Amino acid sequence: GGVTTCIDMPLNLYSPSVLTADAVRLKKRLLSQESFVDFCVWGGLTPQSIENLKDMHKEGAISFKCFLSGGGNDFYAPTLGEVRQALMMIKEFDGLAGFHCEDYSIVKYEKDRVLKNKLDGRQAFLDSRPLSCEIIAVRNIIELARETGAKVHICHVSHPDVARIIEEAQSEGVDITAETCVHYLTFTQNDY
Image 1 (tube, rainbow, N blue to C red):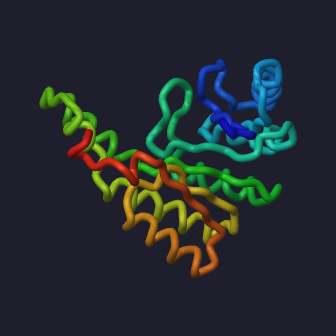
Image 2: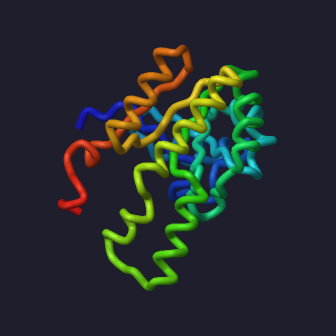
């Protein structure tokens, strides 16, 4: 199908999640036994992995994925103070941090509201993640990247307003990149 490289996320099928140098080595070993194409491994950026970032980088983690609203399993959301500390460390070895940008406090509040009111269905899920949730998280990461000088990547940009904020930060000299997903370009909530 033309695929030449896969970039594996740090919390996918293999356990444990990639939060230590040992986990990077294990993931690379497992993938080398199964992969027919080139591959790269991301490390995880969580509160418990911050002290391991440099060692994971030395073992070949090409970037560090962070879920600002938590990613399930053992992928807990760091505080912005922890993100700031991580970015300072990542800057020291010229690494890259990737962020799934949803403001934790908004997601938690809206999730609790949905559960309390026994709301169900796709629309309740969509309502629990308003656009402001992504905008606030992206702006926070931009400011921390601006302060620390670290390279950051925004994963899965879901709205043109967010893309414009990132473009503006790039024009101001912030070392930031971003991507989106095909379904954000193709479907609306009406298709969902």
